[in-house]
Length: 179
Image 1 (cartoon, rainbow, N blue to C red):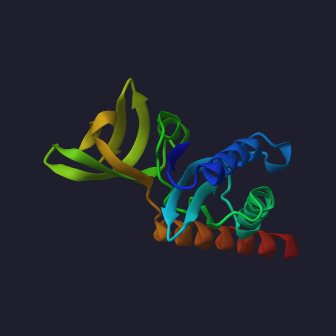
Image 2: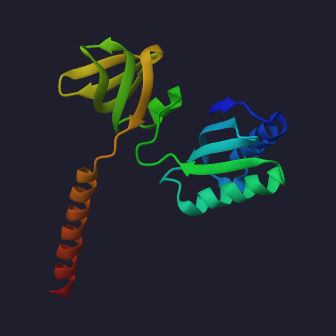
Image 3: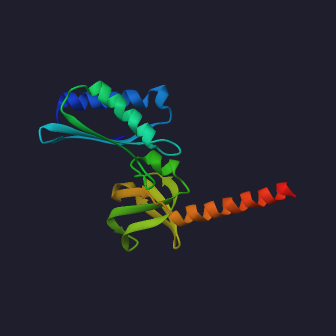
């Protein structure tokens, strides 16, 4: 869990304690706290948490997390933002590079690797401290220490193609059952 903690220490401590409790609560099974931060803003503390779960975090889950945090934080001076990691979820930990093997990714490095700093391809996992991305040119080995940012890359065309194929299959099945 990536975190940045600054601001009112009592609010920040309560926020982090409650996030830990939520992450271990059976009623939030599968929930992952991707990142969180607390920082001072105009006399209050701005709290932000990014969540995910298999299949994605919907508005209802974000509302449940926000309600739980608001109940625990009480009357303190703070603002709260709870958001889904989204379709282009950031990859922040080593485990993310294993969990999303086979997915399309975009990786930005702080150093030039193979003539560029932005690399796109299919994630193939980790080899030690090196992220393996496969693209048209072959395997690209990116040292974890050189990665500035990495995220899944959403391809709407793939979704449209998959949806079109599913509709065709349903239509063929419907015609088959009618005959």
